Image (cartoon, rainbow, N blue to C red; front, side, top):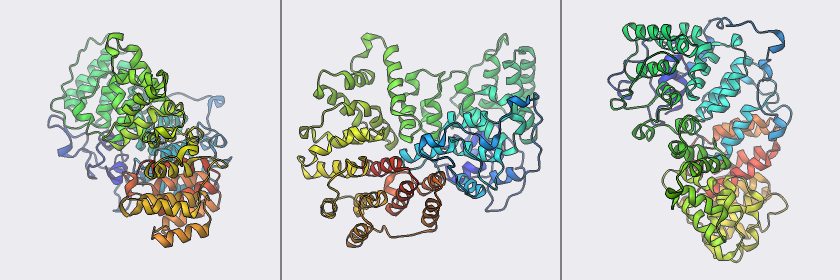
Length: 584
């Protein structure tokens, strides 16, 4: 989906419900439910207009921000000792993730909010995703010129668009509900659906009266059921069926949630055949009741929704596996999360059915009798093709197992894959052990391994980065337009592993285009000069708005890596630069 469609999804609950989970390719539209995007049995989610008229260049999130609506009244009165200051909302100590004590510095919060709101997701780099997520979760003072609660909402909204349902929920949960602004209400609704958590909609019920009267009766019925009032809930859902604006699968799923409450006596059968597309409402309510979504619908779903499904604890591990690969490729899941998921599948599988299953193969990758046996299992995962996100996820699955293989030039055909796998999970020192055997490999394998390690190895370990070695690599590079060479030189120059004069000389000699400057490059350079590490990460995400690495400018990589290096984020810079060579 285009960025505009994501922004329109935040204008109100009516738009938030269908927009979050639509495909990335879905065209932007101001209508809440395009006729070609829903099954014919479902009425449009709403006919209510947007809260205010907006100009062609004004996003719907900005419209919501400007609506003159008071925050909903508190459901309970908060004692003073229980109050939380929204100006310091966050989960991570910025110093623990390499962002210093004031991650945003003196940056303009309104400017940052605009950047975050307009960012197309997912971004090209798994490691940039991880670093950006950490920045959005850090606890620090709110930047100037932005409402503290709206600032939290902006961060949570970007996290949701990155597929980070759990991270967004934690930010939203850190704000007292009586402080919610209209924007925070919208993001909280999105978060509840992404987390498949209908009870989280209940504190927002009154606020929905202002934004989406069509949806509110269903939410009221669900909340009555969840609070132990089955008779009232049954009457309310019946009224919604008779008089409500919404029907079809969307109403049936709400009834399913009502029936999940105690003593309702309601049994609901879900018929997916007429449904042609998933949306956040359907995903959230179906998953909350333990329903597995049809494969034909999940295949068309956005990577972000697949990431939401990957962490849905009510679903069986096997049902979440394919989505978990995508979540790992995005950066939402860690390597260890995937190993844990496979362990759960292994434990729940009958011993007689393990055979040559993937769960069995992953076990062999760790405990095979020798390196050859382990390599055989690792090769199975590294050979997984298809979607680039799944391929990167497969590398992360075997990352730790790959770190146990003893470096040996006899394994040179496997070495590039093993190094890529280790770097997908950040095992930079384990990967760097292969430097000692690189020179004993054939040129092609040596070049692939050396390029990744020249970027990823910690300072003090990397060796052999000379102009002649780089020129040799470029001379043998067969990638289109020598893109791999441009990315290599961009990474080395950004990390300071070659001098400015070396970089300029190589760039001019081979026409790599690294000297190009843009408004974006000037902004990230300025943020780095002002020592604003989190701002650099937001701008990195902005510069990495591409479907894959082949569409990413090497000049963008150079400025991003240089900015990370200058603001003390050397590790993230090394991992991102090496990822560029691993995935092209």
